[in-house]
Image (cartoon, rainbow, N blue to C red; front, side, top):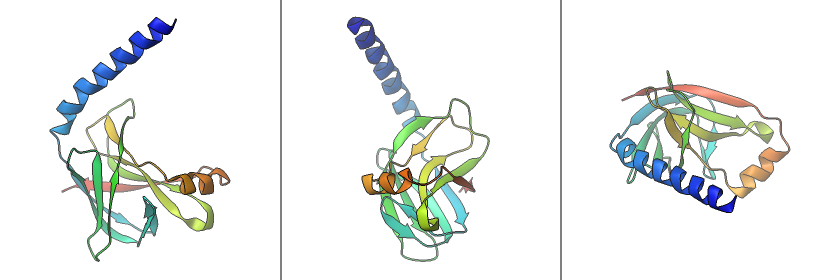
Length: 141
């Protein structure tokens, strides 16, 4: 059984490693109008228009407020939705005191997207709240 698990893990790792270079050739910039304040990687961002772009090895995402000086860079985790996304969108999780946390970034036409990891303090704060998501449509630039 251990050998079977090890073999499966190796095959999965090789498969994901093969997909990452092909997907990393695509660099996407999205634009979205977020109607509420939100938190990304511990930094509170005001409501407004944002550009979301991949940087470096494409696992790093930069969220930049176009009407101000606010910006945040976060290392994301590639995630698969299991199907090709029809729309580009930002997904937020609603926490206590009406705080929204950016949790996912999906680009139209791709199955892979970015999952924004939450800090341990954010996970703890969300543990006691009901699961409520909000999504904001984004467009490619």
